Length: 240
Image (cartoon, rainbow, N blue to C red):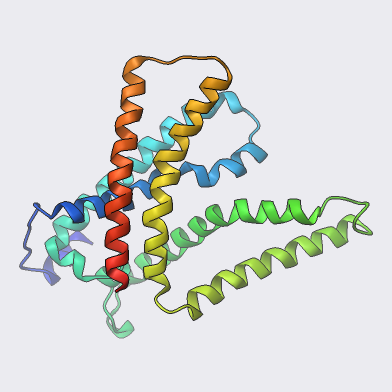
């Protein structure tokens, strides 16, 4: 695949010194990979061995960071600054005309579909579980039988998926709107909320922590504030 890319892109220009705005925007995007708060409701509901969570979390963070790092380096080495001209990596690696697609183009598109599908399921699961709770699908007093409750649950989940599809297809510039929401909420969910809630848990249990950990968390909140302000500014600027 790299040989194929090198034969297509002969001249590759590199300019590592981007603007501070671009650096902050990329940082906000990178934070999405550590947004574990989205999966917390699913973990709390289905976890069987909570004592192993710290080990699993460390392994997950290392794997995610490694994958993102490798993809970033390889993509930039292959395309250089031209990578910013493409909306998605699929557009970068596959020709516009399907008649020019190779086996690599098909593999990339299939892999992307699998990745997007699993990512959607992870994001969708907490909302689906919340709807199940609100509908009380497993409450035999509300529904005539468990089968009826399961049918209602499935219909509700299908309706939620259909709503997501309609929003993506019908709302103008939905990608820019998502960028704005991400600039605001990703930083909050990934950095601010976990830190503040952790402090609250320590306070409720009359526990203390190391001084260096406290200062590290304070530094993270400062970084989060800067990323939140400039990331929101860049997203609003992109909307105009």
